[in-house]
Length: 118
View 1 (tube, one colour):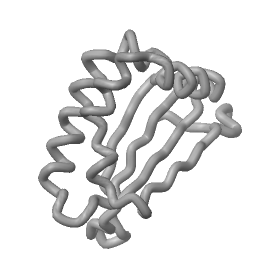
View 2 (cartoon, helix red, strand yellow):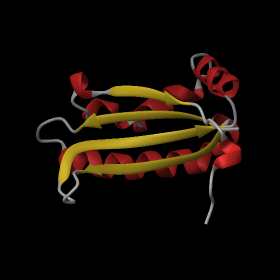
View 3 (cartoon, helix red, strand yellow):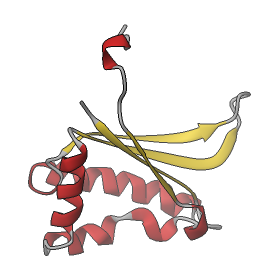
């Protein structure tokens, strides 16, 4: 069973290009350091939110999939203590987000025996 953390945000005014480049650098960093720093992550997905007509809403979403909630918790504790996370913060795009727009939600799968994979 997976545990999902979903973060969403709006880009700070004037930071659009820097934000997009920062996201690309962040994904490259995570890919390079996955085994040592992000082993609990099963997947990470990045989205732009659209309305029903396909128009951008101005929000972006990052979905982090963990094997378990306990794995997510262990990752959060461990990252506070590793020196290598200091460098990670250099590539973290949070400083380009509109601070009051950041939201975090957690999703726990239910009734997986009813799910469909096509």
